[in-house]
Length: 273
Ligand code: ATR
Image (cartoon, rainbow, N blue to C red):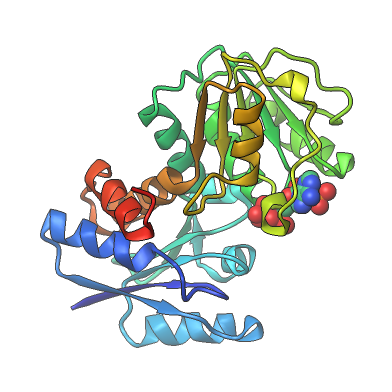
């Protein structure tokens, strides 16, 4: 049977096996999907061993995405832009192809929630790996402006300069931000420490959409905060998780699974509904 897995550390709580097993059942594909948690300095060896032993493809998550970028034989244009790889496929000619489906997953999830990106003014919080992966797919949707704000301003500036050729992207400090924005996307890892990005509450209004790339069984700290300040629409990163997986599944199997039912089952599994 064709074998796939996700590499990460820690990865025990990953929902990817659950999601891909449902995709396989839905599309009647014969495959198995597991987990691998190599020590941080043993990822390269573990990756090699997996493919030497007949693995067909894998996902890569924290903290291995940047390293995976350097280990594959070929990169998709979107992985090259993201500087990180979350999906690897063994091609028919025996090359490891590195791809990145995170940004496409974010955009697909935003669209599935009815969020309009064209001509919208978007605020992206954070300038780490998650922000980098989102920039090209967001700019491809032709927003009127995309503003990056980051605690370490120089990182936002670097990112804006790097993606400037793709669209109207600028960097501002949290203090410089001036509304109105149509959409705020939180790509920071602040909530992992139970913190909030230092965003002025005045930027939240009833007509704004809030997206947090993080997710949990209850509202993330950022979503609770935005709701308190009157945001009408808020979304967490669970849908992005399912959509990036669907995109990876499509890369591997050449068949696109439906995501709605799988997202519903995942929510049930997590106890969200
Ligand atoms: P990821 O790959 O998830 O993006 P990362 O590359 O470590 O992770 O980036 C984390 C991002 O969250 C960074 O933009 C970081 O800001 P700095 O560049 O200033 O470190 C941001 N971040 C983390 N904790 C934060 C906090 N408490 N408030 C604001 N931003 C925070």
